[in-house]
Image (cartoon, rainbow, N blue to C red; front, side, top):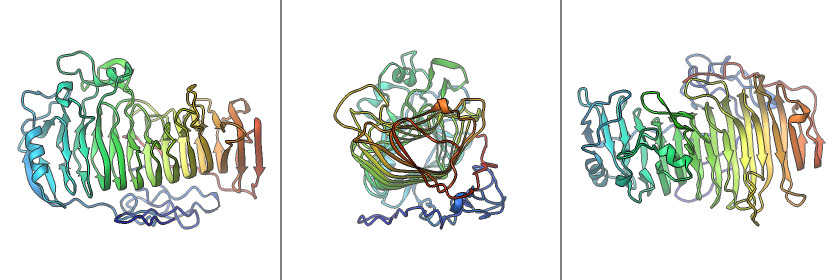
Length: 486
């Protein structure tokens, strides 16, 4: 399906199983595979992961726009100090005013570049705003730290706020929110605040924007959500998000509480539409990607991504504005990745409840590999016990070419509709979950279609109707060479 919204640079194309090969994942990003294009998604193929030396991630995928480019610099700012590993930077002199001044005077279509100067490789800032048409560029080897002083934030809801048309945050450097470090004048961290029910600022908040770009940047240790994304037209490409799921400070010392609460990776929401999340690597303390449908989210493509620690590829918990036309493919979720705080607890998850529920429809997951995941597939309208009249309804959900690889955990599958008037409508096509037992399959109020690819289990339960459309043998997704450490 092609979006016809005016003024958009990007176009979302519905994924065709017959047209798309899985040869867009390069060696070393989410694993190397057999010969490029050796298999397709058609007929339940697992897809060739791309030969060694293949093109950059996503190159040649007909469902994606062109990879972003970095605009020319209008101004280059030199780092004022050298970052010291394991030690929070001094806050005696913030760079906020000079960064903001450069951004505010930069011409549309250009970037403010943060660059190293000799041994100096770091900046520290309070809240800043990226204006319409302007890009913030953080060079390789450079870190932009967020202040640890809550008083500097004031009423700001994010370290970096983006508004307008055609803005971006790019570069091969790092933005570090210092979420696990003690706040100035206190012993608690931002993550302690979250764990106590408080709300800390996001690292990046994109509000009512259009054609936003987030490209190649690394995001670490956000006080709360890493990227809150409200934009009509956006591209997130080649981004790395690394925040411990188990809270430690910069020296690696465990902190209390034990988790980096609410540190979601990327949260498209508040009328986000016509967007792409491509070739990302995410390891966090909460959802890797959470589509927040409080005001409606539609036409998103989420492709060629690798998730380690975190809570999975999620929709919700807000779905009251509706979520539709979502395509997720070539996704790896690794419950054994111990390289940065442990593995994931969920694979695919749709979650809501009657206080914030609505229609979730036309959602397709294709070519998904998970391992050591407690909940490989978790679709529930009963995410909490909260009552209300906003009833969740999930229909037109397709899970295709899905494999949960054998592991040390006992996996569960949850397929729930709310009631007989709000049935879950889901198709399972070539879905294999190793080690799944009948006692770990929970289903109710659901219309479930199996096939045409084989399915390794048959759901059953109260008010569950199963249509078996399996037609012959199908090639199991082997998930070979999908796993990595980063």
